[in-house]
Length: 43
Image (tube, rainbow, N blue to C red):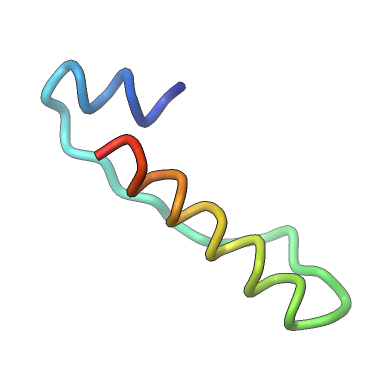
């Protein structure tokens, strides 16, 4: 929703991946990958 709104308005967007780290590093990687994939879908 946010990504679509800023793209529609022509505003540059940056995604900062920080905080909320899981116990297993693999879980954190999965979360970060999902974030980037979602941002890419709305591009």
